[in-house]
Image (tube, rainbow, N blue to C red; front, side, top):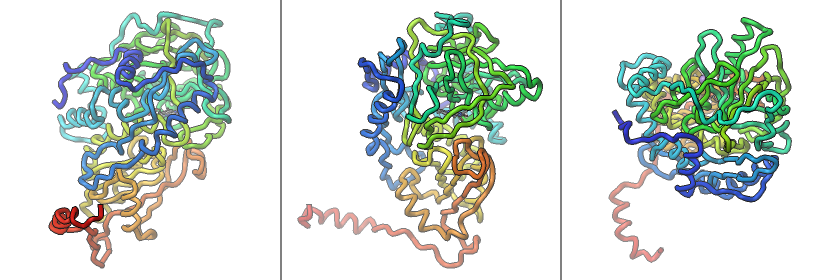
Length: 517
Ligand SMILES: Cc1cc2nc3c(=O)[nH]c(=O)nc-3n(C[C@H](O)[C@H](O)[C@H](O)COP(=O)(O)O)c2cc1C
Ligand SMILES: [Mn+2]
């Protein structure tokens, strides 16, 4: 077993994480009044602009890329706790996960690969079947470490309860992020629903546009699990409604579980328990049957009508462009429960890199071993920030047979949310894929475009504004591996230029005598 469970004490809640960040010099308090309408975004942007050139510097390592680390992103500056957001008495936390270090602090590991190793350790316990079987084995891990969520009777998230007319979302410092945004958006929610057929819980992070004191949009995109729950319930009873609850601000592992690309009907709260190495405590909502993390700062309880849609957006998105208006379901808030002194957790998405790049990077590192269990030929993957997750995935493989690179492209397009990947570039195992200059150089050198580019059609990210239709379009795979005789390439493939060690050593010995520097 790679990790001793006793070594860890999970964060109780968000404020314990805030205290940790502060202790580690990773958080700044802003005592001046700043407006959640645009100004907070600009403060965060400014931090990012100052930090980026360093933050995204690629590793220059030319050594083995197996188990390669982060492109040493130092992040986008510190986490910020705005103590006096204009127009609200609730402090606002942002950029809490805006660096690899803070992601590690969130998961209580010194490197993200430790999380990956824990998963790998568990996955190795049984004969591999399919990828999904493996992920579904996670409940078995729960038997080992009892990571299943625990129901409790009381939660700090219910210290204050407001219902009906007392509900007012304007109590909270909800951001309007960008000038052309359709309004204020809750950007870091955990949206709880139940599969109406299996009763299984889902938790997704879906942004919510505030329409008025008690109504928001519910932007679950069509391929997401919340949207599937909605469709199934509507098919059974088009005039009905489904209960929905939204938790804002929990301990870090739980807060991040909402964005994890795990299979349908696998409980994100169980996965959160696995990540934090302690079960998530859930408390029953006051006005509907759902359960939410007892340690939440704020909970919105309510329902979504199955026959009601409303225009949502535009919204300055993680593509760096505004996603256009669209028709989405509407969330009616019937009850707000909260702590006496809640912290409002939020984030800004926008031109890359933003805080969500670091969240996505953690997902990339954590799920690599899961991919490698099914496809051991995959040595490593990299999703550059500029590729905004779904536009570009670089995959290094140990190539074993003709057409191997194309098999991997098709694998990526069939793998959970990796199905959205617009461009897959497959390179040989000896390319340092975290060094994007090296990838551009070597991939282009390995290419005969007509021969090596392959197109496919399938589901696309809703946010892809260039696709021929919303949610459907083409993908491109680039086989940038060395071509083999067995693939029809008959000329010899040249060696890469490298100086020999003897000469390097001799010049090293001579260096000082050369008078160059
Ligand atoms: C900051 C942030 C905002 C997001 N906003 C949305 C959103 O508005 N709609 C959506 O469908 N997915 C959004 N996502 C991605 C989902 O959270 C992610 O795809 C998740 O796996 C969905 O959960 P599900 O697989 O249970 O549906 C967002 C992710 C992050 C990190
Ligand atoms: Mn899910």
